[in-house]
Image (cartoon, rainbow, N blue to C red; front, side):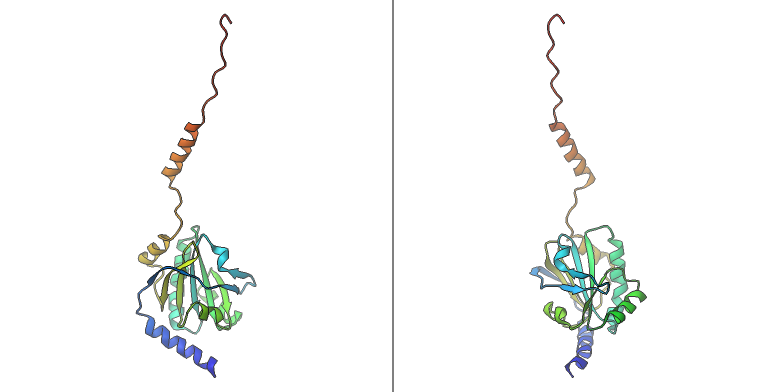
Length: 195
């Protein structure tokens, strides 16, 4: 009986939470996340340390989830080549239902299965969709409950602002120049008088 009410409660929670603003969380520790993907591979959050990770809890029957998933995929594609990854965690469904929906929106991110909802509960995902942005240091930096346009410039800017800084071309050139100037040319061989 309890499982029958779970989808209704999650849907009502998502509708009520859809007007919420993304909330900055100052380095909240992450609960564990170790789930098998539809590809059979086990994914651990710890494997993505050093990258910004968007963890999205969703279900195919959840209309707000269905609405926002294309924008998550758009964000993922726009950040291809950057230290960014999306973990789409399907809650309470089997691999076939999750894969069918993911194929319909051409989802290219890792598709994980939380069949019993234990991981969603551990993360405090009481409504769907619930999304967490984990910084490269492994702590939760943002949380959002409800549908959001993840491809908006403001959201993209917040996510790229968490990414580890790469040295710019100018600073890399300056570093190379500094290292080159430290290399001293060999001293000329002493010349003999009369030679």
